[in-house]
Length: 482
Image 1 (cartoon, rainbow, N blue to C red):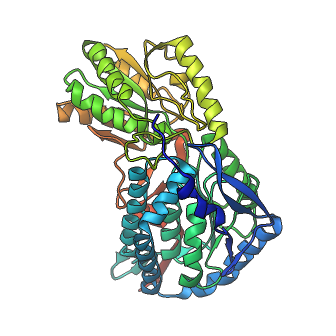
Image 2: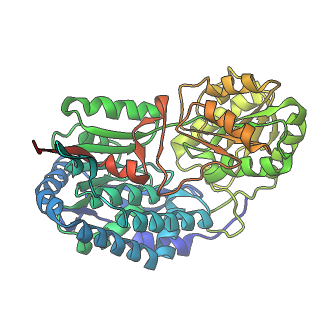
């Protein structure tokens, strides 16, 4: 693990007064909580925490602001999103550095998150909300128009705290909704920072940001004046969100857990496929719902693939994200760190660890990237979602068997197929049960391509025209002509 001095980097955050955005004003929380740099275990800032009254005030402000924002032109709303993208671009380096300190990921990855946010915002601002004409003949004119829902609760995860802030906020605003944003308790700073700029960018109440110590989410998901919830998190939490919103039949989009597989075909280039799979298995230290977690390799390639993957893992530099040499940062929070340590015990007990397998000293929540082979599929390392830098490699002899094993999971977020025969790979991809299947890549998201899960990996989609429409209700206009 490499060392880096973070005193100068974090001092200004400790001195900065982070506040909530409520009805166009920056206000303190009813309480506050420390924010921890997961690479050092040290307090880097203090963040506000809302109580029920402040949550109710935020929802009330959003509800009151809705009619005027709904009636604003799409062009005016799109212009606000473009100006937000410009502000983010101007403050790119500052925001990226805050992401590193609160989340732990390397600076290059944090900067990429900010760049994705800019790209997504500008793409969304350019999208059309024109209605769809279903019929236009002598008998009738029928058009489907899209109408905003009202108040949207955007509930953010800790692994992509800023990117998800932007890609939930932008479509909600474009479609005419008002928003209450709840960042994760452990990574609130980047959203709160941009909230300071939003205060003068949008009319009061259109965007509200509330702090949370773990109790605000249910207040929002059960609130009678919240019309839609956009939630990213675990499947278990998603089920609670769905139950909480049932009383008022809220519109809900859930992007939940994943246990993605990668199938390495017999004709795959071992070196090339191992490099690609390594990248998308260990990105963000394995703390990604859509990352590769189960790897199925044909027996003819199994040993050489395992060796190649282990070498890549063993060569990784683990350290503080502000150190330019760092490849992988820490586990994001202490609670998840304990969960990952339990998974390490399973790796040693139920498989053969060929890379990593240990926690690193130094005060932060560091775990070396770990590759496990010869593990049985009944192990929780394979059957459950392992949200950390531990990945299992299994062998297969028959492709039908590999497909069946890959599909034998309650999750259905993503999968990938790796091989040289693209036609054969596409046929395998068509049989895999997930919202997205990639060939010779993974985690390749784009703002114009819908993204969502099947089975218990979620409901609804994000991105693309379909993702925009999730923030609306269908409104049919039927004009009889005879």
